[in-house]
Amino acid sequence: MLVRGKGIGCMWYGIGNTGLPNPAAAFVKVHIDGSVTVLAGCADIGQGSDTVLSQIVAETLGVTFDKVYIKSGDTEATPEGGATSASRQTYISGNACHFAALEAKENIVKVASEILKCDEEEVVLINNTAYKNGCEDKTITYKEIMLGLKSRGLLAIGKGQFNPSASALVENMQGIPYATYAFATHIAEVEVNTETGEVTVLKIVAAHDVGKAINKKNVEGQIEGGCLMGMGFALSEKLIINNGHMKNPDFNSYIIQTAQDMPEIYPIIVEEESGEGPFGAKGVGEPALIPAAPAIINAIYDAIGIRFTHLPLTADVVLDAIKKKEETK
Image 1 (tube, rainbow, N blue to C red):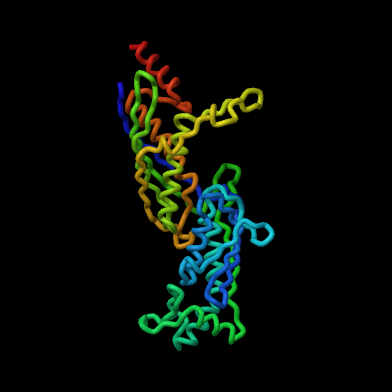
Image 2 (image 1 turned 90 degrees about the vertical axis):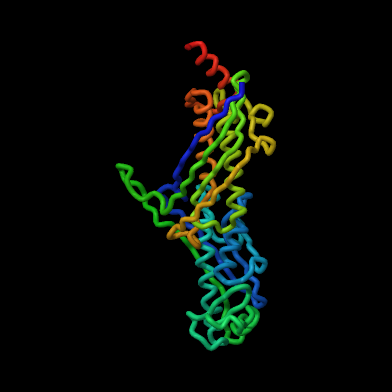
């Protein structure tokens, strides 16, 4: 018999290293043609940080995304960026890039104000152009501004660094271990086959407070990938260790979820801007994974009335629990 159930999983998660110094740095240079080079230590291992950091710099300088070139994760050329872990890079390296771009922007705004004959506070930079606020019909190009810098002997170069305002925990475990937190709630619907013990995840609704979504498609991808990873944690991934040796070191015996197992996922992006993050952004790495397994476990409980406290819930584990429940009736 196939029975269905729904469950909820919630989480809050500190962004960055726990109560430790957690810095990152970046360099930004705007060239004579209006293009921009970013040097950032952040390693993009598939999470899309190169895209996000480039977007932050582009938005800060008022240039289009295609004008930004980033070199990242190169210890020979880039400054320290810290580990790509703890869901920290958008928040921390993003701020470093933002501050570097702000410093490079200073001379750009100075020269643009001189050309436009207005106060620096009135200069608006957008889409590779500048104009005086309230006079959108009269613009100058970034190239004109950069030629103005060159004629004045100025450069548009910036450096930036950021370390979150966290503090170490004291003896009674009190303190401020994180400067900001992410929050999420997942709702899962599952179908349990009571004759085989097989669990199928049908739908997951995943709502995440990400501060500010710098790249919404990227965030949705992180959420969807985290949900699938959480399914693996809940239902199939079992590490077998014997005397310190891994007994299932390949994907024939260590079973992960694949694209064929992907349920319907409905990502919901909640934007509640963080005070310190670049444009209010926070991280969404681990938070996308954490609530998935609890939501699935609670859905299984709703379906068959059995509470599990160990993972993974492979078909044999679920079927054995169903049989024991029937025997006690």
